[in-house]
Image (cartoon, rainbow over all chains, first blue to last red; front, side, top):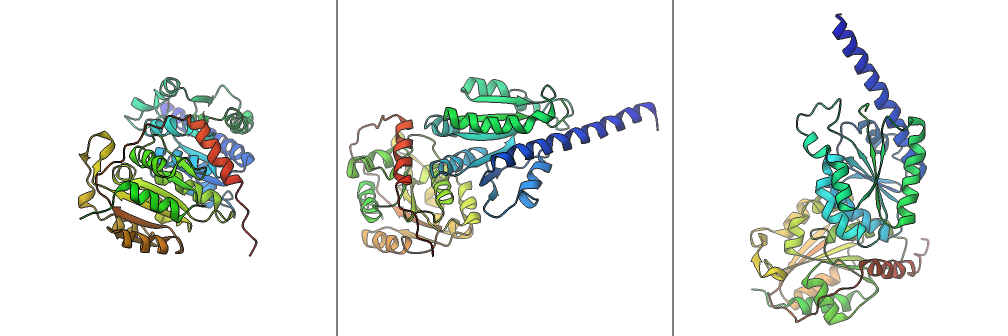
Length: 189
Length: 200
């Protein structure tokens, strides 16, 4: 193996280890919330997290786990769940933020309905999709412009703190009666 | 040819399901319900969020399950708004909430914005519901058909859909400008006050 190949191999191993550690932390954080409904949308970076809830240990009796065809539909279903006293969590990628803004601002935000969304980052270092950065790099700016409160978990926060931060975001959403997004970077940055 | 006006249909549904949570679609549906029935704690008024009326009702139905005796969870949606969020038809069909009843008041136009046509004339919405796995759907055009379909929907296992062909007549109605946070809290308090379901 050439030197360049070894470096690439080590990077791949590191990325895989980071993905697994951060995925485990996200799972722990969401499980600490103990949601009764988990709404999700397809995501390659979240595949370990999604597998836990769809057909892993997180797919437990009394918890409903299902796919939302569009993020805005998930926001509206979560609004209804919240009105009915349920404990929903949404899991999706940041390239779907553009889809949900109208529902989020005219429903959850306007009606003071708490909502926790765990949103994976795409489009940065390690990204394999050539075009997803055009929306994903603007995730923070879009949320800021919309007045949506968000927190970021990436390499700057020790992975050992991630689960507790996600749990605190849930409590913060309920305390402040509004949607709160936790942006999670699973790609090593 | 439709001979039902929207206001008459709304008045009928309100009287038929006085103890059920009802999610009202935006625009004319919400405003005319307020005009014919007044402000009701069991009515959740969507002031915007076009396309999401059924999704909100789905969430309420899932969240309540059979925990209360509130009965059916009803959504009253327009054809234009439903077509904006048509993917919810598949989600409802997949999850099959037993208490969900959806009325689609179909006048074929976006009436609140001047009457621009929707695509509903070419869409068999009852067939869409059935193809998505809903437990039943009916297409009604007269007061008698509406009454029979409502009797069926309020006793049948859901989810069920009733498409009601309506005219483009509009009731003069004021804009509704209440703070949505108050609307949500009033509705939530009403839901919480419903008696719990007896254990089987």
